Length: 239
Image (spheres, rainbow, N blue to C red):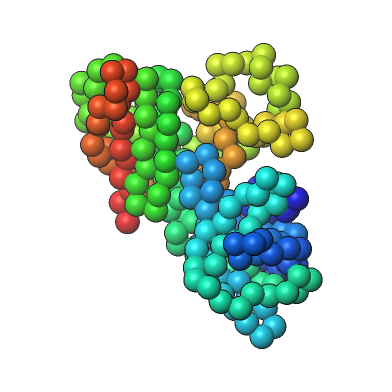
């Protein structure tokens, strides 16, 4: 297993690590990492890995069946040997935009309180697919509600519950097709707001900003029909 340092601190941009394996495809597996691996609709992080005598650009990170994280080089190059010490550095500007978009999508699921059938995050925009037969009638009202939640500068934090506790509270799960990720029998919840001011609480393994005010301005993009019962709502992030 690779220790996921971003779980403890999503703002950590660099770390040291040791190479524990190299995959047949050229992925670099380490004992710990700040790189988020592709999953839950969020892309894997990009960045750079450096070691004594070399460095390499990383295009993405992926999770292996073993639970370890492999850092995938952007192009073929000489790799560090197993046991080598590394310094891992994120493309922080890209990651931070992922964090802003991902948190904004959680808020989108608040202003459109319908089951979610899919979703995706990128550095420029995000989208959620809803079980929604008809398109929303008032886009401006939805955008205004989003802006209000962002401007309230609500705290964003995580907490953990057991799988059994989640089964007892099925209303926490908004996604219809994706099973919440389990870590040693526990599920990570992301809470927006606190106490009576909580506006959202749902399972999520992704990275998020610390407060909604950090999201900045977002605008609704296209609302597309995706099947008889589905509508895809796009959300664009201002620079």
